[in-house]
Length: 140
Image (cartoon, rainbow, N blue to C red; front, side, top):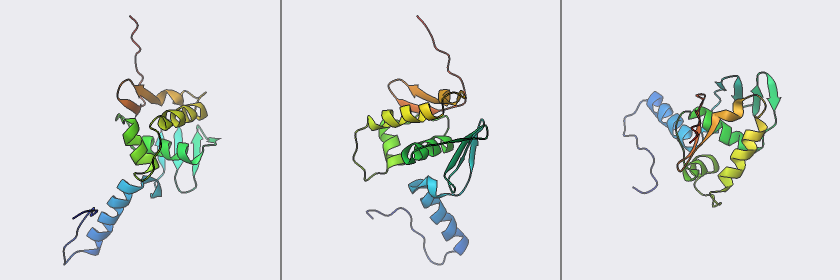
């Protein structure tokens, strides 16, 4: 079946149906969920569209907000530019993959000054990761 994400056979429990619908919504658009996210003093509320760092409000554009929300809900994993485009911008949007770099730079700038900009890490040759672990830089 083309375009089918899930299938429930009869008879089915309403609880199971609701759980499956929520799972599809989480996969398709994680920012529709009302759960607040916190990471090392960085707080994001998807319902009110507020972001704070150590109780100080941040002003983010809509794309940076969605990018930060995706990162905060998917920590410690490396995502390529293409994966970020699919998950943050959506699958039906056709933009250059370097657009991700521009928005990463804007997001880092917005959260700079508090040490949180180091959480958005560039993984050379692979993409980007959101991590609270510090990366040791090796000098040759």
